[in-house]
Image (cartoon, rainbow, N blue to C red):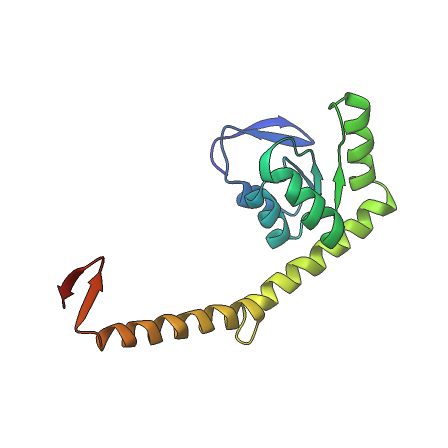
Amino acid sequence: MKSVQFFSENGYIVKRAQQIEVLRHPAVGGLWSHCGWNSTLESIVKGVPLIYRPFQSEWKVNAAYIVISVWETWIQLESEVERGKVKRAVKRLIVDEEGAEMRERALVLKEKFNASLTSGGSSYLALDEFVKYLKTKVEMLKTIDHIELYGSTLIL
């Protein structure tokens, strides 16, 4: 990470770092997030559970459907952010058995994500099908010698 400044025995402060870089570090036990799509996916890719506090737009939808209903690897902070609530959420995630279970589920999701990208994986196959579809459309376009659009003809 760039511009690392020593903070204490327990942590560092950086001026700027890519979130995915931070999540890659083995000392990271969780991520505080607004539950935006990028943060949510990056946490899955790296197998890191979330403490989240959505407060606008699709963040609430992401939280309600994806995080709570499907993945079950996250702790939601509700209402106002207060010191005691934050402390309890961090304790649940880092210290309590519940947090250990969330980290295990997060690692399972990471493995599923990685498997989807390998040859024969769901994402790999879906992208392959999409490329085949585009190739058929390109071949079809090669057979067209003109296009009529709104009464005008374009000769190809």
